[in-house]
Length: 119
Image (cartoon, rainbow, N blue to C red):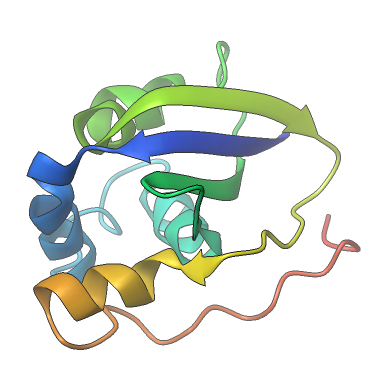
């Protein structure tokens, strides 16, 4: 199942989130670490301190493991909306914004563009 996620970044933990993305901590998390990293590649800053991205998840309730291990530590007010496929989100690339603030470089090479035809 695919979801459109909108959440408020917790400013106090933004540097820690960047570090975990940079050092591979999140990518190594099983079973969903790579999908979380891919989601952050798709993420965009929108509406001030809000971040929006698409994510694939098979948990019930949606994003249960991701919330417990990463998302609720670094984001608040998560809104999750079911969608049929990944889709582009307008706004400033979230990883670029994190890198500018906390590292001066993007933590990973850019993810491939998302098309509405993704499965």
